[in-house]
Amino acid sequence: MLIHPAGKNPTSLSFWNLIEAHVLRAFRTEHGVSIKELRRAVEFAEKRLQIDRLLLRPELRSEAGQLFLERYGQLINLSASGQLAMRHVLENHLARVTWDEARFPVRLHPFLAADTHAGAMPIVIDPRLAFGRPVLLSQRISTAAIVDRIDAGERPADVALDYGLTEADIDQAVLYERAA
Image 1 (tube, rainbow, N blue to C red):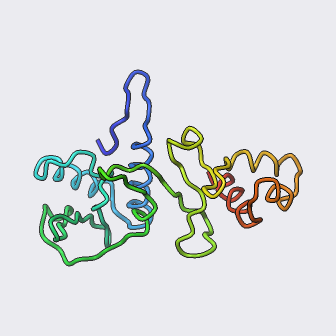
Image 2: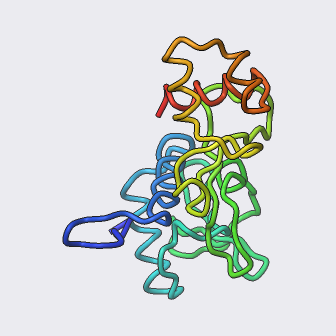
């Protein structure tokens, strides 16, 4: 199984499951890694490397439809049963996950359909903020609250002024909520 739910009866998902789904989606859509390759890599990591929850590892990489694990200064090709590979560092998706000192994921900065500039990460999902709801990080205002006000007919400039945000921040919140 690629993602292990936090609870079974009833099925419930955790914040870590959200991170796993984010990474899984990235590998599938952005890097062209097949489900078969993902399953093979997870199985190899669990059995041979004793790594549980591979999709939560910040050392996980992808290139040309294959999965790699950076370990002990080398890149292991998980798609080729652990063969060593040339170093390729693809950080776009994993750079959007914040890891704590124990190397556990604690915050996700989701991609927006049209990030205005490289590295822009105004929206965050963090279980310690707003009960894990997406917020604009600068003021910790829920993206849903912003969109509710826009949908009620308020002008973006007025909403931005009320919250101490820029109109670009408001646009990002609306863009995220509409895409979600």
